[in-house]
Amino acid sequence: MQTTSAIQTDALTRAYATFIAVDKLTLSVAQGEIFGFLGHNGAGKTTTISMLTTLLLPTSGSAQVLGLDVVKQNLAVRQQVGYVPEQVRLYNDLTVEENLGYFAALSGVTNIPQRIQEVMTLLGHPEWRERRVGGLSKGMRQRIGIAQALLHQPSVLFLDEPSSGLDPEGKREIRELIGLLNREFGITIFMNTHELSEVTKICTSIGIMNHGHLVMADSLANVMAHFPDAASLEDVYLHYNEQQKAVVPA
Ligand code: ATP
Image (tube, rainbow, N blue to C red; front, side, top):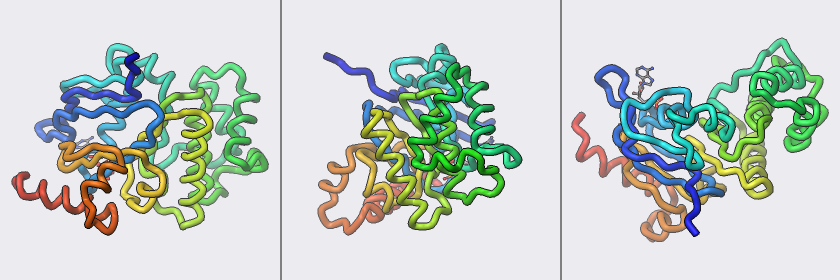
């Protein structure tokens, strides 16, 4: 029996005027994966997520999320995906509960009090409900951002730099939450990240972008097996970046 990929792209391309930010990206992420999308600043990772979450139209090529076309079936895709941007968008003057209630209503969630209760329980901090968001730490805001993205019960969760700027404890909490969502709820995770140590701890597969091109994609186990002498994922990552520098004109 053929299973539908969580994410499938075919020559997906996005240009900003004459600059091509994502160039003929062909990628497949199976359901249930925790996929780490790596690459230097400006490699095209956020642009890719923006297209996959229907926030940005591709210039050419195509992409499906759970078999749904991100352009032709964009509303259906939005019901299936959650997105946590690098800077989570929350109202500082509202409490956690008020924020979640507002965004739940925007997403068309019908059982709002129950869903807020469920996502707060998932976070493991139901006592945060009454806290004003403006007074929360970066790590707490990040987790509320994830809670917000889960309100409509998505099957695929996109995270842009979820651990960026967090202390080791904050990173561990985000990692544990991502693991829980994947393990207990079967949510496929697609995350942009520069945190290679987090990738080795949690990801099941990775892709590396370089100047808009996908230069490799494989399971983490395969990647590490192909580089027996690599002390860490950093060596693998740098290897692909160096290789690409040789073919991409400055
Ligand atoms: P980072 O790790 O720094 O977040 P990234 O891999 O997510 O980088 P993108 O944000 O996708 O990279 O950007 C890819 C390229 O497209 C960059 O060169 C960026 O400057 C350019 N770019 C992004 N958005 C726009 C825009 N709206 N207009 C013009 N150029 C853009």
